[in-house]
Image (cartoon, rainbow, N blue to C red; front, side, top):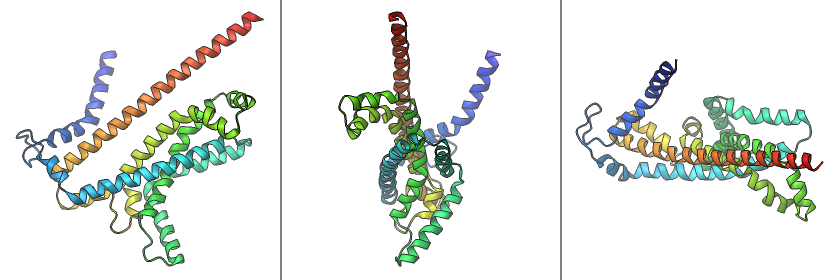
Length: 282
């Protein structure tokens, strides 16, 4: 049974990662062939670095993802604090449902609805161009925000509420108590949410395609325009760089999760020890 499970797992992983391995190998191919590896070369990476349009798309994507992540982290953290402090169960359920809608809604529906809204508002205020960088930024914040909330909110729910009360009893103001007690407890969730928001914003195509303006193309839109003409190994080089960047973010995310789980285990051990001491003292 164990051998068959290992074989089955190996086949699944081979099916998932074989295309990525092929892409990585042929990004270093000396020739343009997509089936024969003629030799190792970095020429396609050199050609990629000389493509000004692609480099501008990379810059646009990084700028958009950074701004969307920063706004989503700030607004998402404040929203998670507000949801956690709601006393009414029905309000909390309603807020959680509203938060889940952008994630469960198909991207094409979200993109079309946002495009129509931006065009409608643009015509009402009389702007010359309804779609631009700011419309893309608002669209990216819309679908990144729920992921930040869902990463921060569990950390608040796991936090011992008596810690904030103890800090305020010792003289902390509510603002200082937030930075000294609540923010460190939320930080693993904030980091994970920021990584997810940045990755989703960098990778998004459908919503960006419907809400982008003239002269501001992101990297996914640039890749889509390149595939219309011809597929060159230069795209393989670009995809390889994106893959390793994503893998680096994933490793950081896993490291934060491991540190957070270790802290939780240590906290549980300390709670058990304190309970044993109380029982023995009685």
